[in-house]
Image 1 (cartoon, protein in one colour):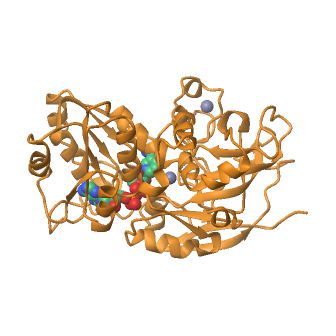
Image 2 (spheres, protein in one colour):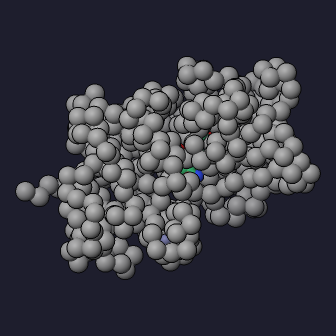
Image 3 (cartoon, helix red, strand yellow):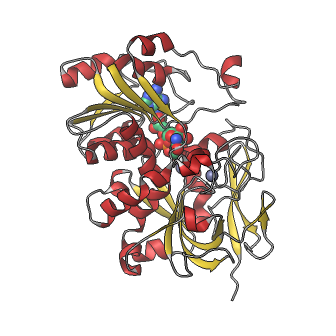
Length: 402
Ligand SMILES: NC(=O)c1ccc[n+]([C@@H]2O[C@H](COP(=O)([O-])OP(=O)(O)OC[C@H]3O[C@@H](n4cnc5c(N)ncnc54)[C@H](O)[C@@H]3O)[C@@H](O)[C@H]2O)c1
Ligand SMILES: [Zn+2]
Ligand SMILES: [Zn+2]
């Protein structure tokens, strides 16, 4: 019996709706002029709302109205294309948000965030995202995953275990690997002191990853007190940036020195200035991190920076050109790692850490399961700064398992 499909559609700044969508078909189906024999159809079990979606929904990107949203997908394979050899119907899988062909130079080097073959405009693609190749979004009941043998991570556990851990496993499609990538590329290891800018889901996932990597002290900065309380709830120190403009001074109060070994930007280009009167300042996080990271230290930058921002407050920022204090970072021999997280480099190990109870990311980010048709409310509450990571449950199965 063929079910019907529906999903979340961007209607314009501040508005998303849930609309009927075509049921995906593999036979003869095309996306991006590409036949999908290497793809599968998933029944979507969980699909999360992300801060990256909010940049689009706030009208801060060039996303066109009508775009189907959603790049954080976990599901069950219900149909496999002719060229899919190893993934089978019934497999429960996590989908890396990056779409990658597995055949190009970058994929071979595991830079799957910048695959050369899946986006005509630039390297790198994702489901349901502006400038990311035009692939359909996954905040839906059903979704198509291309190059399925390469992209999918199959859970090596029975259905009951997977369903019980689904709120954690759902974070493998993006924020846990992304937070981990930020920490890892910043050099976080046993005994590190770390500053994480941003206590949204990515910042909280990054703080979780820092602790998993053995950091001695993780300091999280944000101006959202509820989100900072969430960070304190699992052992982080916090800095309330609505009260304190000088991050170095606050770090000194905690560590005795005004600097850290490693720092991670989990905010991106919509960053707000520090202190009681801070308006939007797109370079403030990058400049702060270069300032408070030790000489020769590393800075991870998962926070998103765009090439076009129609809502920017100045002409330069409209084209993604920011007032960076690069001289400061250069003088300190610091390194910065930017870009989409190559999810596949981390998701298997993080899955094992979840399955064996070494990491509790759903608890730390306050994963909150809601039905798909409540997605518009989820977007609105998340936009108001709720200390939650919303997990859409299109078939009512996650809620039932919990
Ligand atoms: N690189 C990747 O692969 C990747 C993947 C997922 C998300 N992202 C990006 O990561 C960023 C965070 O995602 P999220 O879902 O947590 O978003 P979010 O919007 O929920 O969280 C951002 C947080 O930053 C805080 N903030 C604003 N200015 C700040 C400042 N100057 N210092 C510290 N905190 C500040 C906000 O109050 C908010 O709590 C977004 O830019 C998102 O697009 C990147
Ligand atoms: Zn995301
Ligand atoms: Zn590729």
